[in-house]
Image 1: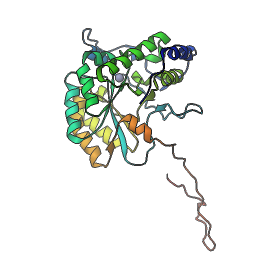
Image 2 (image 1 turned 60 degrees about the horizontal axis):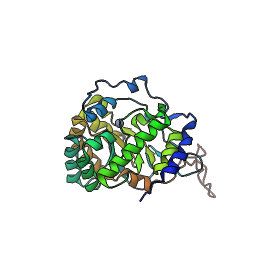
Image 3 (image 1 turned 60 degrees about the vertical axis):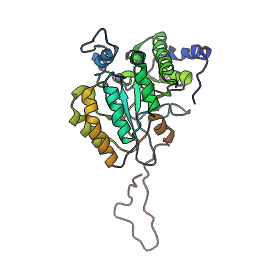
Image 4 (image 1 turned 45 degrees about the vertical axis):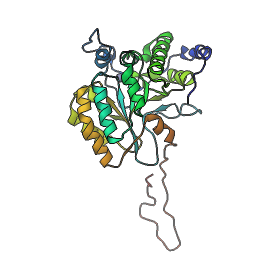
Length: 296
Ligand SMILES: [Zn+2]
């Protein structure tokens, strides 16, 4: 179990923000701060409107210095383990519908919830936890954190952490920054204060953009590999519509669904591509190429 670091540490650690850093991923398009059609009275709708921000597929983030790895866009695991993630909820109807689909298949997922939606639908947040899934933080109101003040970022994370804890009784262990925009310094701070690993993704279904179940299914099935972290959004009906086929297709391929924290716990150092020279035993001629590449 994670333990919260006392507030005094949080405050002192905040100095980590003082210096600007390069955001990960590197580029967030200009329209990031221009929600398409905000609905003033509905937090869920606000989160939905703020979602469609294309970012380039994040690269695998290497270990930050010499310490433990704190950022993951995929994991390197033994076995066909994957993590299916759902962002921007809870949603009043789509999330419960999804939970039924997961329950029917015995699949565990990870929900990156927006704090203000947790505050609006605490009973759905509690159900997520009660049914064995991981609930984690996706900020309070889905802003682009990498360009915000230290105090504002702290407010976003603290309010969400407390809302999840209050609604579910558990403290989130991982964090997914909206748009993937979170500087290295911010990631280190979030890890120091909350113990958060920053979680990105390697499979982007683009479900929020095309709103096409068949595309969500085909991208998810084509791009998922062992250790993948799959990005979807449970606030869209079309995403939920895609889930039975996507989940059944991934099960048929032999994938095993685990939560993000379980996947991260299985992570091992990235395999090194070895250029192995073929052993030159007595009497055996070397191959013409002189060497072969050994796939790991
Ligand atoms: Zn989001």
